[in-house]
Image (cartoon, rainbow, N blue to C red):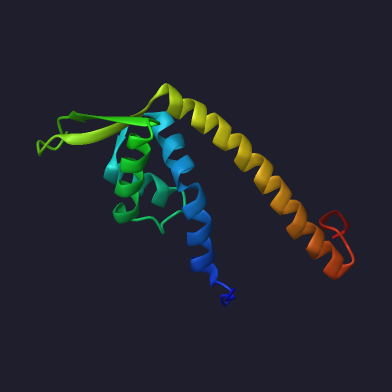
Length: 129
């Protein structure tokens, strides 16, 4: 097995986001139906500017095939061609609930490892500082 070099900040963020981008999209759709570019804008506004339309559309298509979202066309507010909007299905709501639980547990466990390592290296905990 070949080991890769450590990731830089943006590379690491991109790798982490890749694993949860579907949950981020489900969460955004849970707020209200959205069309493709709205996802990019919302993610960018939330500080996740690494996401492009090129990564959103294939993921939305996979999510639609999996039955967690469904699409419909609606007129564009700017008068252009109709836009394809995505909304959650019941299966999508269930998946979002499960995904949020997995994410919460995972981040707790990773945080524990990262914070315990920092404590071991400094000899003090965050509470001691």
